[in-house]
Amino acid sequence: MTTKLAIIQMDIAFGNPEKNREHAESKIKEAAAQGSEVILLPELWTTGYDLSRFDEIAETLEGPTHNLLISMAQQYGITIAGSIAEKEDGRFYNTFVAYNPEGERLLQYRKAHLFRLMNEEKYLESGNKKGNFRLGDIPVGGVICYDIRFPEWMRTHMLDGSRGLFVVAEWPKPRVEHWRNLLISRAIENQCFVIACNRVGSDHNNEFGGHSIVVDPWGNVLAEGGFDEEIVYANVDFTDVEAIREQIPIFQDRRPDLYE
Ligand SMILES: NC(=O)CCC(=O)C(=O)O
Image (cartoon, rainbow, N blue to C red; front, side, top):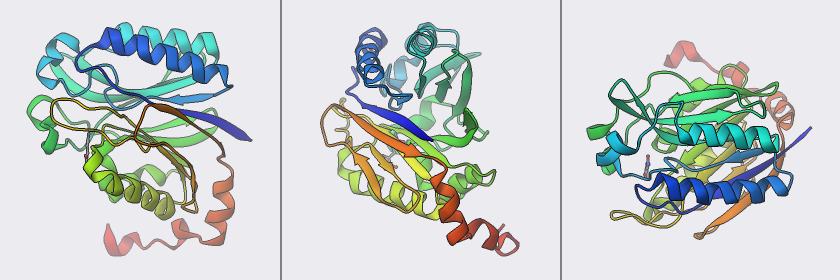
């Protein structure tokens, strides 16, 4: 069965959640009108990297961004996912959330690997739980940006039979070839679909690279964005994973006794 995906490769207004919510809302409407079933937004799409103001602009999971995502998921009968600045008990996290068409939260994954080049370790706490969730019956994982440089962490997400890896990012343009190559490698080595959303535009420190991408479990690029705002669409059949895992059974042939 095919799943219709839409990746919202948007620019993000620095530290301006209201403006970003308005912008995302119009893009979500546009993607839903095309029949999309799963819609992916970028990393920290409401705030950008305005980390020093997270005490003002981060939210609990009951905040206005979550209310908006829940109401849009219900109104359009879609699953919506992306990462948000989360605040809990005076601590801050970069948290990937997903809501199903009933408005139920499927995922709360706090970024595990904090990226020093963008000062995350100075302002954020890291998460310590995996980002596995289910799209209906389909097991998948969700991780955030720098996490993709840790293949062992991605593999951990795949050991339960997950068929897809959702990735959200604010990945700078000068390393966009790393982004592409890492994502294609994660798809091949885990024989899974990789569905990845990167923002575009710039903030005071970085220009971001876009190139949101959907890769199949054989490593073929099914859809890819450019450097500007756009919605990247792709249809995927998560059951395709089975034939490839039968043909080259890496999950059966692993030798964890040697390397775990
Ligand atoms: N937001 C991030 O985690 C950026 C990661 C990144 O740019 C990298 O090169 O890794």
